[in-house]
Amino acid sequence: MRVVEDTPDPSVVKRIVCPHCGVTIEYVPIDVGMLWQGRDMSGGPDGAKGFDCPNCHDQVITEQW
Image (tube, rainbow, N blue to C red; front, side, top):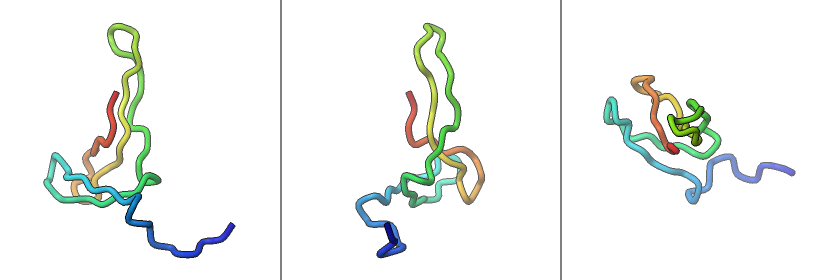
């Protein structure tokens, strides 16, 4: 395996607006990690994926269940 091009393909780049400071952030799947996971009150799964905003450092949630 070898890297042919080191910039992410546009098909995997996503954008989101930080709900805390309002900046627009571009990210790729490798930037997203587990923020928290557990069980809700009924025993079902509960959690979120995302990352820390590079501007204000608050959590930006990209997926929640």
